[in-house]
Image 1 (cartoon, rainbow, N blue to C red):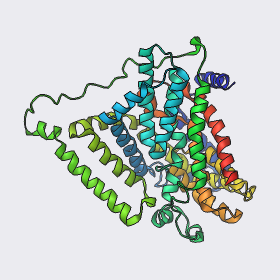
Image 2 (image 1 turned 45 degrees about the horizontal axis):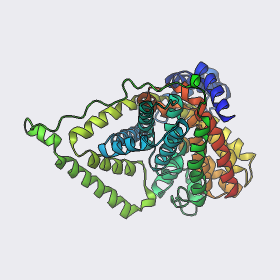
Image 3 (image 1 turned 120 degrees about the vertical axis):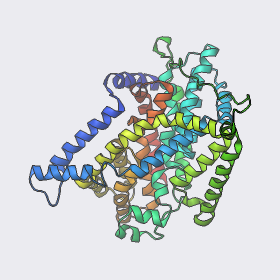
Image 4 (image 1 turned 30 degrees about the vertical axis):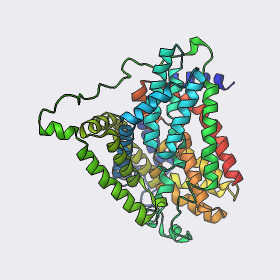
Amino acid sequence: MIASLGRILTRVFTKTAPDPFVIAVGLTLLSAILALTLGTYPDAETIPQKANAMIDAWRGSDGLWKFLRFGMQMCLILVTGHALAASKPVRALIEKLAGLPNAAPTAAALVGLLAGGLGLINWGLGLIVGALFAREVARVCALKGIRVHGPLLAAAGYMGLLTFHGGFSGSAPLKMSTEAQARDVLPTSIYESLETGAVPISDTILSPMNLFVSGGMLILIPIVLFLLTPKHDNEIIPMPLDDESSAPEPNNTDAPSGFPDWIERSPIVVWALALMLLWAFTRFSTKQGFMSLGPNEVNTLMLALGLIMHGSVRSYLRAAEDGARGCSGIILQFPLYAGIMGMLASSGLVSDFSRFMGSVANETTAPIFTMLSAAIVNVFVPSGGGQWGIQGPIALQTSAEAGVAPAKMIMAVAYGDQLTNMLQPFWALPLLAITKVKAREIVGYTAVVMLIVAVWMVVGLLVF
């Protein structure tokens, strides 16, 4: 039954789903229409005045260009994750693990398990390793004569974006982990209502509820992917593997042609920088505490580990340049989604929607409604940090009114945000580039996993 549902949804999305950039443009136009027709602007009464106010919000500092800093952080998470995944030790591990599956269902399950598990550590690492692993599994299975479904393997490689917000690169819990970051996001009245002013990750990422939800997802995801595997040969679409292998590594066996060539190959430079980065990371962890890690600290550690794994400037730069190609979608689409956020926030639509969800909720249902509203908002604003900036204050205000612990509401937003990543292909852009699979070919499978995981999230929010 699950496999049939996956096939049906895949056929629907294959025929109807446009390119992710087209989706971003379409959502921009839809948001503009909603802001004009349903939004409220205190100083605008006529349609032309509303239109000017909307355009000002779209182009202003809280619109198109609001995510420049955050976008750079996300690009670095992607690039450093890609570079680490492309290092020889990690690639060797990927190649070794790729030889384990002896059947198509176990291949999909293993890819989903690895991608989902690494997503809890770092979303960039989970996304890139998931993509590379999916491609390598497809290659090894082809050599073994095992027919695997390329779109399903690519969908499995995307599972890190279904688990990440409950892990150590989750924007909402990290943004609330220190008082400075909490003050930066929350209105003064809501910030002062919190007992500690900040919510440490021991109450969010490392809470019993999140360990239950995220740990359970690592069991559910492989099972669902196993069951989604097509059973008939005529349903299987191989993954394109013509260009799957990376270009050959630079030849470092011949004698250096001069000092510049020698220094590019030498581990001295990368080790010097890596040690400084590790020192900086250790200093932060010592002074601020490991529970206060943010995106900058995650990138610091990932950069240091990648440099060490590659062992030379030449090797690391080559991997980083390759990873940077996947940033084009982030660079082009982040401003559009920031503009969407600016229009919806300035018109009051996001606040109205979230407040409505909170008004019909009580202590039991408030986290569930918050998760559902976050899932819907994520389709329009696929940025955990940007979404928390809009919905975080409302979620915490609702938590105070409904008597729900702030940490639980933070994770409710996090769960909703990561859930509809399985419908919104924005973050899949690097994976699609690596696997050569189209977004419309994977969404049917990711949607099935999303529906089953959503039930599990609701159970977690009800039990704890």
